[in-house]
Amino acid sequence: MPDDSFLVLEVKDTGKGIALEKQHLLFQAFQQIDSTNHPQLAGSGLGLVLSKQ
Image (cartoon, rainbow, N blue to C red; front, side, top):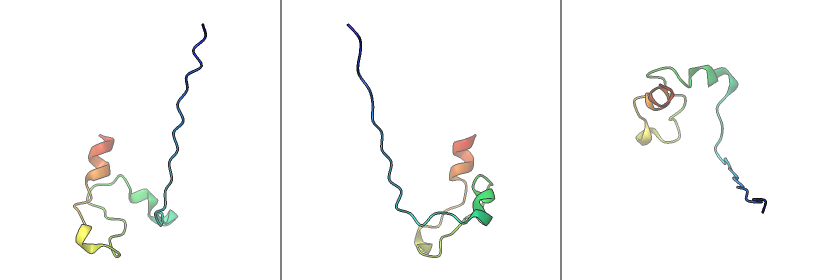
């Protein structure tokens, strides 16, 4: 009996995106790409760096 199971995964991103000229900063420590719209949510800039490691 063949297994016809499958998984469908859909992702929808409604964010404003990251400008091409700032994308190189994504995985560098202590870099905050843009917190102008939500300065109260500003962090240390270590989240993606630690995730990558």
